[in-house]
Image 1: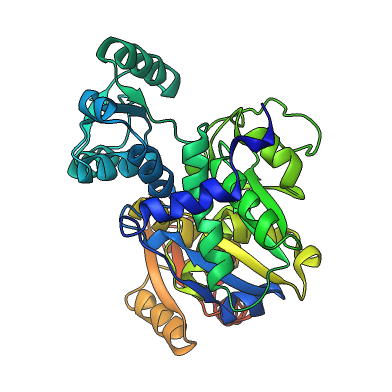
Image 2: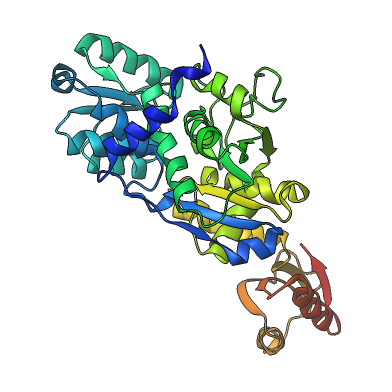
Amino acid sequence: MSASSISLTTIQEAAQRIRGHILHTPTVPSLSLSRATGTNIFLKLENLQAVGSFKERGAANRLALLTAEERKNGVITVSAGNHAQGVARHASLLGIHAVIVMPKFTPSAKVTRTADWGGEVVLYGKDFAEASEHAKELCQREKRVFIHPYDDPAVMAGQGTLGLEFLQDCPESLDYLVLPIGGGGLISGCAVACAALSPKTKIIGVQIESYSPLRHFPEPQVTSPGGATIAEGIAVLRIGEHPYPVIQEKVSDVIVVSEYDVENAITLMAEGAKQITEGAGAASLAAVLKRPKLFKGKNTGLVVSGGNIDTRILANTLLRSMLRDNRLLRLKMAIPDRPGILADIATTISQEGGNVIEVNHQRLFAAPSVQAAELEVMIEARSPAHAQEITQILSRSYKVFHI
């Protein structure tokens, strides 16, 4: 397979083909992220697409290329995420029947959203591999066209339209364009566009540790352990055959980030840029935070590739980040068992500007004396220094331990 599977021409043709069917998303500077990272950050907000992800670009382009007979027979794909919704939406807009095969244990919210966009959802298999095999069987039996999420030149060209828009809209020439890598469709399409229109812009890929076949880039792909990850949008064990040679030829480097790196990036996106992002959507920022010297003082483009994150996961991510930053502290205190003690402690915390989030008052099982009690309290502070001040003041009156 050669790197010539797509070109600037095919990407420009894709842009014309899908115009009016996808949102030309804004490219915006982020002063808060620029201050936090020491680089000039520009964000491409693909989380604002109708399905909340860049994925519908490639789906829209591939579907638009179907023949009349192929449209009549319908399409099929396998996905538990953004690609499923992209195919469902654009197939529905074109009047094409789309079957979306998902593993049985796909979260119900994703199943519902895909069905709401018009896709016929088929739940099959305990994992993605079994769902994929079933999709292939249905594809052959029903003579449908399989819409691959990344390993298809038409899909790659559709994703590359993001790069065209970024270069067109960015007020400054970019030194770096940082993109997440799953199967490779997005970064390969954008790399081709940048190589033709802005050859001085270096393309940097990002992978999550558990799915990092390019961790030794530019060396060949390696086996990854897989497993649960917050960046499920890029949880792909191997780069596609079509994107891989493009990546080898046109990508400058690949940065591997950890789960904590991505969690911190999601939090910074929410608090600093005021953008809700999924794990894969925050991966580009995670890479900049991990390698600050590389990007210092440069014009850096980050693709917020998607914003489809479960609200519970988002809430837990924000709280975990606050705990790591010591803006949430959990304290255990030995206190006398007398009336009004809880009110005294709460008053002390509030007078110091802290906010009590949770309290657990234990008399029977943890207290060393019948006249004593143990109190566990979770407190929100403005900063690590503020948290330390609150702890020191409480320590003047009680024995305080960090949990």
